[in-house]
Image 1 (spheres, helix red, strand yellow):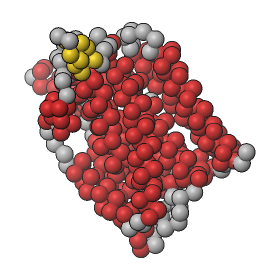
Image 2 (cartoon, one colour):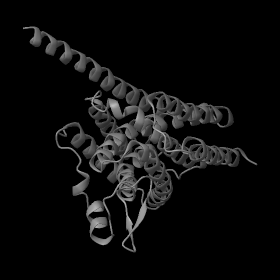
Image 3 (cartoon, one colour):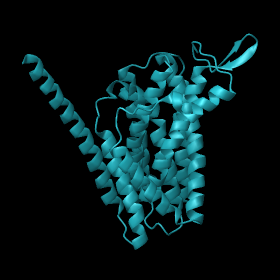
Image 4 (cartoon, helix red, strand yellow):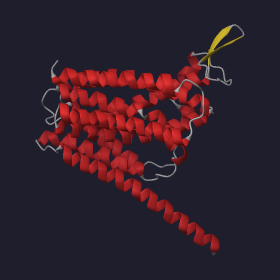
Length: 326
């Protein structure tokens, strides 16, 4: 086998073993997810991803590993923003904690399948119509601008989405305690439970986020926007997306209690998206930004947004204490 076949086979085996681990060990019971379990499982997925990064370093090259790490870090940060929407969905439909893990697992499996198809379609379009990269660049620049100034109070409302309205109109839905069931029989007829609705909405939300994440990763991993996709490019795009998705479930339980702790993470992600948009647009003029510079921008923006969020929250807490004492 050549190095490309070995890399794809290694990724496939890791993906299969990880899914079997998640299905067989973590989900053999409807037990509650404690904070300790969430931390251990999040660390497991991160270590697994970094292990694959190390494999690419030795099997391929340092450049390939750096591209994977940059793409994975970008996808992972976008996943955090994704999770905040997941939390709103689970709250809206009053999903019990014991059912949340099952719904997330099925939603993640669907998201992986949809991402694979979505990535294949995106690569095909870019290879056939090179100019679409500049459309994606303009879209990311607009998305970053809109996200940066988005009002936090204008929360996502699952009940107003087209997906939910479609399901409510054309499917038989029954608002009963699902108890881990996706369908129930009521008066001799089959009805979908709210757990089924949640799973579909999770997959739909992930696809919506893929409109940002996939063009972003494509821009990060390619050295020349006009050159055809290499096997390394494809491997990095698929693996970074899927590894980030695999850690969503444990990351959800880890961040659920900290959803309000990172007030300015949204702005950090917005700046990164705008940067990637500019990176894609300036390639039209022959200006290329290397992967190390992109990695530095991503780490700086995300790190600064997290640190400023912590500083701002502590400053506000001190101010509240002073006002109470006064």
